[in-house]
Length: 184
Image 1 (cartoon, rainbow, N blue to C red):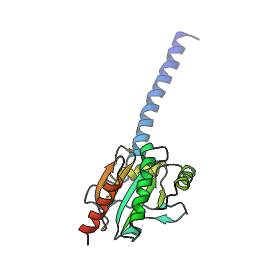
Image 2: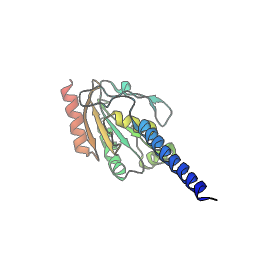
Image 3: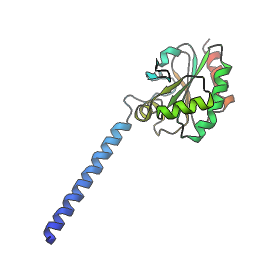
Image 4: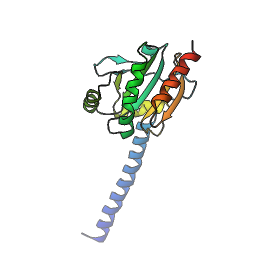
């Protein structure tokens, strides 16, 4: 093969690589960009409709009138795993139905089912998967998609507060009780 042919092949490969890089960057950016603006404190909580482990579709309107803690998590996330028993205890402490804990899993359904069964989680766990979950957690104000991420929603359906990282049982219980007191 001549030097000219070799250089032409290298130039074509280099051009294709550069074009692929920019096309891939554009695709990844468009996939990660939320379809709606991020919700901030005082904004209406973004709407969604996700299946629970029984296949029933659940949306935030199902919990209107309650203080809500929405927890974004995944089975591979060690801090998420540590806080799950606390969230279960929090759920149990509001058996009167005034507040709710909702888990949204950014994970594979089989892994979620196994983990929920292993820990005996009784509060609603919704399946968002990777792509839809990424978009939803971004719409709830977590642009970096770090987990765990908890959002407290007022009984009127507006965002009150968000916590990036593990939330303690005391912090979560106090925040939900405060929301209920403020919205009597």
